[in-house]
Amino acid sequence: MVDLKAANERLEELLDCVDHPKAVREGQRLFCGLDLGTAFIVLVVLDEDGNPIDCKYEFASVVKDGMVVDYVGACDIARRLKEQVEAELGVELESCAVAIPPETESLDGGVVKNVCESTGLECVAVFDEPTAANLLIGTRDGAVVDIGGGTTGISVFEDGRVVECVDESTGGTHFSLVLAGAKRMSFDEAEVYKRDPAHHAEVLPIVAPTIDKVTSIIARACEPHDVGEVILVGGTAELTGIEGRVRKGLGVEVHKPNHPMFVTPMGIALGCVEAAKGQANA
Ligand code: ATP
Image (tube, rainbow, N blue to C red; front, side, top):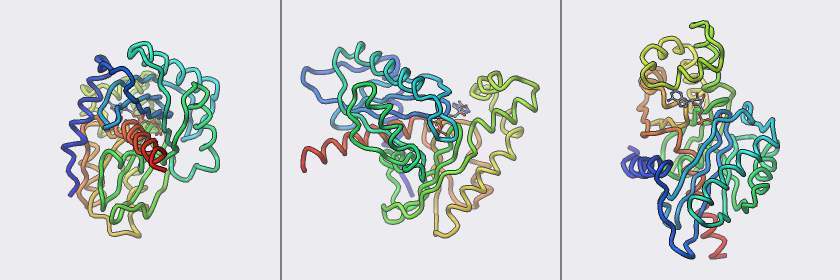
């Protein structure tokens, strides 16, 4: 069974860095992960041992269904986050990794890389999102499910290798649309209402059919494999109690780290550390 203790400790440390970035030694190498999402753009900065140094994020509408639809807007936000971190840390950032939803490499891999490089960062690796998430989670046998804003991405691991990687269009945006309809709110109001943990007990039954849709997507991806456990990550996994409904629907163990929204961004940055070390050894 996957042990989330180390991942949870790193996530707590990362969240602490949002308001309290760590001091950087002169000459210290830093490694970045840039996550361009449907709802948020996140920049994570780690040291060479994968310890969190800084993290900044902005709510954004530059990606839809996993595709960049506002290239200039994406570049502007990415540059703003990089400049914010550089001003706080007093250093220039250099190496960065990015991620895209599974199966979108030919469509969007180059675009996400270009957004990253437009900021002056060198893009050292492009990962698929659930595989990046697993660099932090570390499951050898199980499915990592990234329930984001626009899509749900699933990577199935057997013996530490990815044997299935899919992405389908259902995520937190659909939860917000259902909530907006049920409570006669605008989409933007529903989005904010849904994210408040104080509203989660009320929101959960309203969005239950959409959770079931996500569960059926997970079940279909896992069906050809003997998946013993599922790990939920991504912002939509922040919804209190979602793991219980998914567990009931799937009939297998379902785990959720603390702060699931930051798992993929942190995993991407860990991928940057690995890729840069690989380049140095080549
Ligand atoms: P994608 O991976 O689909 O491109 P993304 O990377 O923006 O999108 P995430 O940042 O993982 O996705 O998740 C964003 C979604 O998570 C949004 O729909 C947002 O409303 C939802 N979300 C964030 N925080 C919470 C919360 N506390 N409670 C419920 N939902 C939340």
